[in-house]
Amino acid sequence: MLEGKVALVTGASRGIGRAIAIVLAEAGADVVVNYAGSEQAAEEVVRHIEGLGRRSFKVKADVASAAEVDEMVKQTLDRFGKIDIMVNNAGITRDNLIMRMKEDEFDQVIATNLKGVFNCIKAVTRPMMKQRSGKIINISSVVGVLGNAGQANYVAAKAGVIGLTKSAARELASRNIAVNAVAPGFIETDMTDKLTAETREQMLQQIPFARLGQPEDIARVVRFLASDDSSYMTGQTIHVDGGMYM
Ligand code: NAD
Picture 1 (cartoon, rainbow, N blue to C red):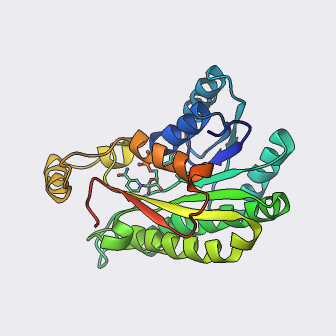
Picture 2 (picture 1 turned 180 degrees about the vertical axis):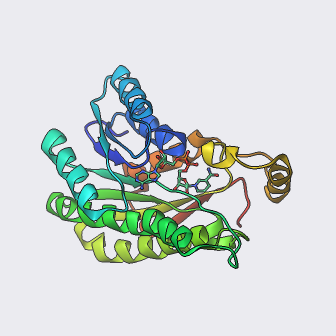
């Protein structure tokens, strides 16, 4: 499905990003693993991908920094010669009620979850335009359309990602670059591990399938958007949330 393609996945050392990196490699892509936290975890993902017979290396970069993102894309081009698939997955939460939310809690989440996506789209635009092809996939969230008490910063960023996806799709379509988003519901990762049993129970009541999703549920939809099977799609947000938003 993705034989000969080069993919770059942000926040790929764990959770949904790790699953995306591995599923893309299983489909035949060479994968660059971006990370910001544990180097060891990133190295483990690289080894796993190499074990599948694909090329991989890790790059430490904070997506909120345009300079670090540019350097990461440069390294990808230097080592693998091109970039076919950019998956903007890195994200953080700093939850608080609006009345208690500190300015830096708001700023950090917008910087990573929204500006980070912009930085990565901008950095791959030129090489993808030259190639006259590319697939950009942004990870939003179901709360970006539903809203969520205690997550005004995160929701604003994730709603922003949906708008950014549409604008980039319109700008880049003439160069055969597709830009789509995936909006996960509640997925079992470190991000949802922190939840109390009570919150978890409340969540389950909102999910028609009555279970949390797995990182692979998201990764398989990303694989579809990265492949030619989605060749007539751009500017879309696919909800992968057990039916929460319909
Ligand atoms: P996670 O916390 O397990 O993983 C997030 C990854 O992003 C980590 O590897 C982290 O190191 C990396 N990261 C954080 N800040 C970064 C930065 N500045 N630069 C580079 N990398 C950075 O979370 P996850 O659940 O795997 O989430 C992945 C994406 O999916 C996020 O964008 C998140 O908002 C989104 N999402 C998750 C859920 C869920 O229920 N887990 C639901 C909807 C959307």
